[in-house]
Image 1 (cartoon, helix red, strand yellow):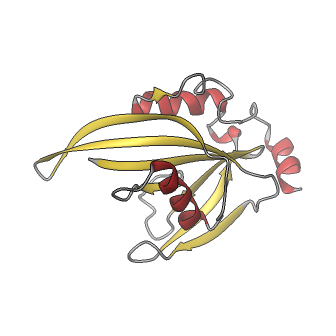
Image 2 (image 1 turned 90 degrees about the horizontal axis):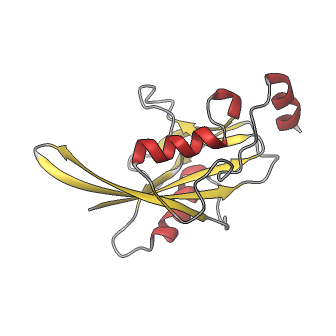
Length: 165
């Protein structure tokens, strides 16, 4: 079985996403990665979040739920188990930053930004996105509109004023 931990990190400006400038065909992603054998999934979430973002020693990861799916690759069936977490981030982070994940082989540059609700994710849509795409088994009472801490969409001017301070 392949075990993954994914982290939906948010603050009042949006949800943390990244792209990989050297691989423009790869879509936007949220931080996360593979759980090592014998590693508790929460420890993997903390490790992967720090490795990928450069934002280390974070606490407050909340379980959102998990999903299972089977897929075929190279003629073999694989079982994928994903566990989803939410992490509240402080306001005042840079609008964007680059980070090299030296734990990846080879080292990968990632460009991070806080994606505003105006750009397609508000609390309800984020919950639905996770639930529908991954057939999420919800942690009790968590995955509902507002669960990720995102605010209703701001217009561009409001976002610019709020997120620049």
